[in-house]
Amino acid sequence: MFPAVLCCSVLLTVLFLQSNGQQIITARLGLNVILPCRTSSSAPIRAAEWSRPDLKSEYVFFYRNKQSDKTYQHPSFKGRVELADSQIKDGNLSLILKNVIRSDAGTYECRVHSAEDTARNKRAVIKSGPISIVHLTVIEPRNTPGNTGNGQHMVGLLCLQVITVILYVLAMPY
Image (cartoon, rainbow, N blue to C red; front, side, top):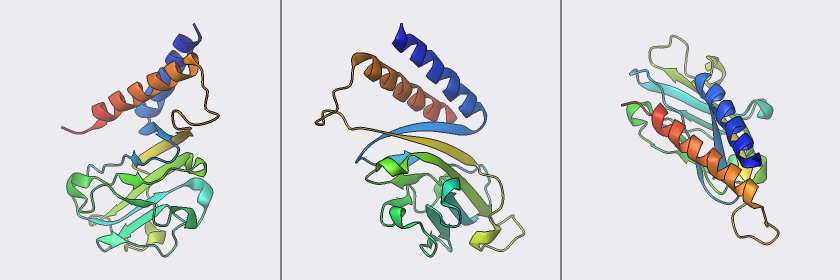
C-alpha cells in the first residue's frame, strides 16, 4: 500500500507544480541533469539567467552577448553548467548541470531578457518573473556501498521518474 500512496502523493504534487509552471526533476549523485527552460517569445534573447533564490547575489548561469558570463557565478557551479543548446534555437534555455552533488538540490529559476524588452541587458535588470521553476532533488546512485534501499523506496522513485518524463514530454511545444 505504501508505494501506491507515495506514487499518488507524488503525482498530485507534480500535477500541481506543473500547472503552476514548475517542475520536479530528480538527479542521481555524480551524473548530469538537464534543467528545462523554454521561452515562447520569438524575439532574440539579449540575456538569460539561471538562479537559485538561496544564492542571493550570485547566480548559477548567466548568458548575454551570445556567450556565458561568469562574473558573478557562484563558485560551486563554475565549470559545471552550460546551455543544452548554445545557439538557443527555438527559445531553448535548458541548462545542463554536470556531476551533480548533494548541495545542488534546491529550486532553480530561469529568467529571460529579450530584444522586445525595453530595459538594458545588464544582469541587474532581469527582474521579470521566472519563465521556468525547477525543483531539483538529488538521490544516491544505484549499486553503491551503503545504498541498500528497499523495494518500496525504489517503486516510489521509479514512479516519480516516470511521471517527470511524461510531464516533460507533454510540456514540449509541437
